[in-house]
Length: 474
Image 1: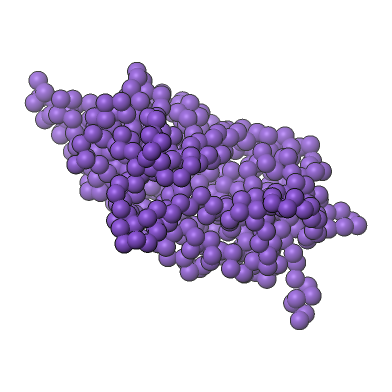
Image 2: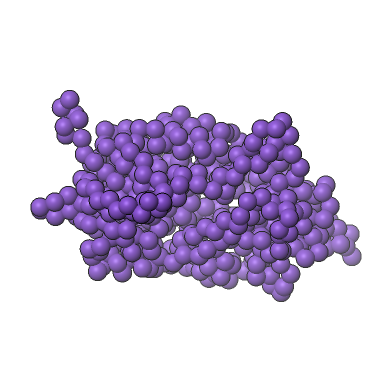
């Protein structure tokens, strides 16, 4: 009874991975957490699509699909572990092909040599081009481990490294633009340190996914929330002052009824640009910091149109990258062959991000989905650090994948939530979290024991293969 009287109330505005993580963590710490979401379902599960399976039962497909690795996502993995959310391995084999001709460029399988995935398809008409790309890939991965590039953009680092355009525009940027969900130019303007940290921790480790889908994860993470308000638009948030608590004003999307509630703390777990519009008494400096975060919108389509895949079905992989022709190419699409993960699906089902071919309307499954994603720059990274000194003023907090010193992915959302949880609770809620200040990125990461010598061996082996193939080409 005494605990109930002293329980603090927290409003969490937004239910992406950051908001859900914070909701789970604060609820476990004894806080009364109320979540607000503009969609009619919890945010992380809003765009799940149901497709009929061969057994007559519906198969729920996450949009977009979410995968993660142990090395780059330790806090997400720990959160899922303590929340009882099961995960399972997910194949990340992929093929790159020309989107117009649908002819393959290179196919990467699950077989590895010295920690690196090996190509399972090489264009025998241009073997040297494929091998050169792979040698450049190894060089790039080695630089991710040893080079200090704090002030450089990725564009600047690649120029210093001297890798080929083939590697940059056929391998690196198509995959990175999918990871960061942004254009090639935005990828090239990314802080090199963030990109290199990501690749250094994902190249040698397998991928996982949530075993029972996003909806199962959402149920676990909001199970202890005091209240859930979905289908409501938060229109205004006011800071606490000496006379009153923080306030949240929201409108029901259906009835248009306006409500106002008080909370001890309010967490804006939204994109930075949305927080700027909602917080009514926003500090001028905070407004400037939030405005430094840029965003791009991407399109995801779930469909049955096979034109987003290579022409030859034997070359299909769980993941495929369709690259637009050009010198160099400036755009690509990323497709997941959903049947590989869900064999019970009836007929081929694909999920394509940024389709560069027009998906036939008759093959569409559900509407086109639009996602807004933050794009990191050196300016926004400085804002991440500076914003920390304003967290909790007036009991207003800012949380999201954009508010961490890394690529804004699921791990970043959890890291941000842990930081806010620490600010509200005054303690770390689980021991795996390390507070990542900017200077930690200046220290080169380490491969697992023995990998450095293996890398050298791998470069030598690939060079030998290249020489043999080059002689055959002559």
